[in-house]
Length: 121
Ligand code: HEC
Image 1 (cartoon, rainbow, N blue to C red):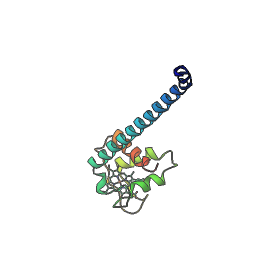
Image 2 (cartoon, helix red, strand yellow):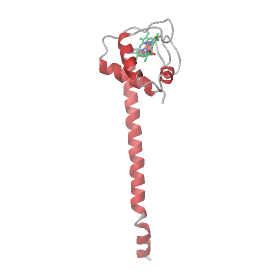
Image 3 (cartoon, protein in one colour):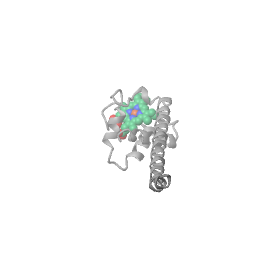
């Protein structure tokens, strides 16, 4: 009786183990991504991006979700937005200009560009 049960459950146990590990790994990946997004949003707040932008709604500048949607399939968007975040510019969304952010490092500007683009996924 005891032995038969052992034989039956043995092949199942590793499968459950892998399933649990996979689920745990997925949770950790999701948590890490959420952490990352929260840190990026904090950077945007610290750099006063939210003075002119919101995630969902147009303010002075376009909503971040609208920016992400516009460039969803645009592989050059990350580089262009990185430059625009540092140098500012006008004409892509209307007649109001985005001010330049010369104090922002290239790396931080890239992080912010990636974060904005990630909001469309
Ligand atoms: C003074 C207001 C203002 C601030 C502060 C501001 N933005 Fe903007 N932003 C704008 C405006 C206005 C536009 C639209 C410009 C246009 O039409 O080309 C814009 C456009 C953008 C775009 C889209 C650019 C494009 O070419 O499509 C991104 C990305 C962006 N801003 C990110 C940021 C980030 C990140 C920060 C913080 C470092 C920031 N903005 C701070 C006003 C602002």
